[in-house]
Amino acid sequence: MPKSVLALFVLAVTVGIAGCAGQTKAEKTGTVGGAVAGGAIGHAAGGGTLGTLGGAAAGGYLGDKAGEAYDKKH
Figure 1 (cartoon, rainbow, N blue to C red):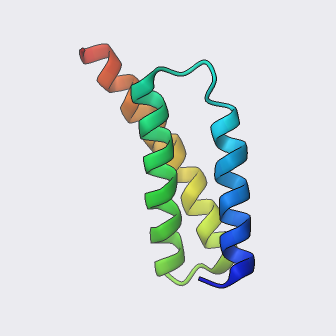
Figure 2 (cartoon, rainbow, N blue to C red):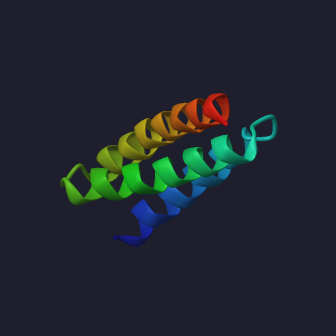
């Protein structure tokens, strides 16, 4: 990953994690895990910086929803 893409990705994840203060542990885990996986998939798909950040955003959202669903079941 080029250094600028990695720096932007780390910044986006850091800012995103700061918004997790009111989340449960499952939601936080889902959000962070989804963001990392989505960013990696977006980058691997050849999306460049926009694809990486878009994948991280989409993955974080889906991971958060998965964490909420987990909390409802348990």
